Amino acid sequence: MKSLYNIDPSHSSANFSVKHMMIAKVHGGFEKISGKFAYDPQNLNESSVEAAIEVASINTRDAQRDAHLRSADFFEVEKYPLMTFKSTEFKQDGNNNLLVTGDLTIRDVTKKVTLIVDEQSGEHKDPWGNLRIGLSARTKVNRKDFGLSWNAALEAGGVLVGDEITIGLDVQFIKEVK
Image (cartoon, rainbow, N blue to C red; front, side):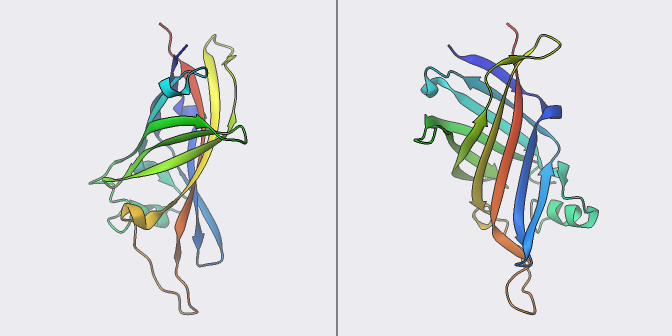
């Protein structure tokens, strides 16, 4: 039986990492995430998820870098305020992971991606009587596929920002009360 849930934004995170200066990864996240989840564990074909991230809520713990990421060089948040995901398929893989394929839209560019849900909790009641579930998912994308192509060459060779972005989601959902 399908259950409907809403993202609990205060207990959810959307994070990313990218190689910086060909040396190590820099991590960041988005502080404003919302969405809905319809889940039927007995019939995954009936499941769906939609999520939106307010791109201006980016936080890499460096105000100057965050301002650059909000600019036209990267996300151009004035023109493209939301990043969205809408699922098209749910299935299990051979390792007991849930695979959620869908359309990721960044800067009005939509590409199909698959989220690997590598951790999921069953339904639990919180102290206030709400039913909750949790999911952790990961995927990798090439930022250039979404028009995020700004970079700078390094004097010693290589580039300032890597192309591959690792995306991580840790999300709690609260069941809708009918």
